[in-house]
Length: 247
Image (cartoon, rainbow, N blue to C red; front, side, top):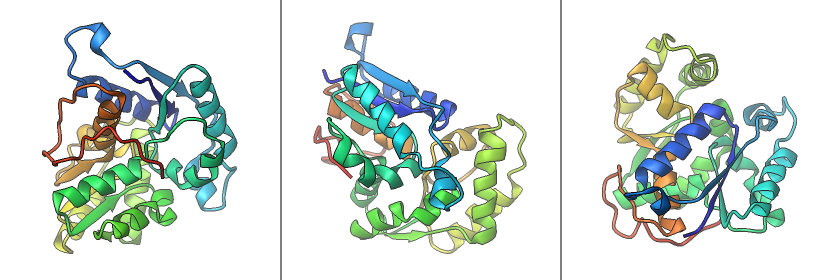
């Protein structure tokens, strides 16, 4: 069985969520049937959104430090528990010594197999402005719907002032309105395009037809590692192949 390396710390709770989903998705009856996982919870990685918006330090050096540490410890392939960080993946690829499984590509592939025509994106401002999901979904033939400016700000604030700040009673009134507006505009499903947003859905009881990018990545990673998957997602023929793609 292959060893998964997780570039984590973006943020710590989201890293734990990804690892937990990998464990719960693995069909194992005893310890020895679970997948070996290496995690580098690198909280020194600078804020990805700030860097994309030109307001902060590039995270690439710290991302590469994590990749190097995980590779040296025996990771057979790498994943990242942060959607926004995938914006910097093309800058990382020339320096990676092992394959990388992209959350963005994997999610776009899943949406295509689901037959979606129009999907809403719930993500940080950095992910929305980076274009990473827009490009991947456009390539898959899927129209992407972004929240309007006020809704984008509300979702971004929920991520930072709600989940990352550990506030269990954050007011999500504006977020709920944004979901309703996007559904009315034709969104068939909402991609949870930030690893804090699945946590927000649970913490704040958000309602909608959600596609958890973290769960999608977890299931693909389990299959790529060579273990049997207990899927929490709708069945998509051929999705759980063991092929490891690069961004």
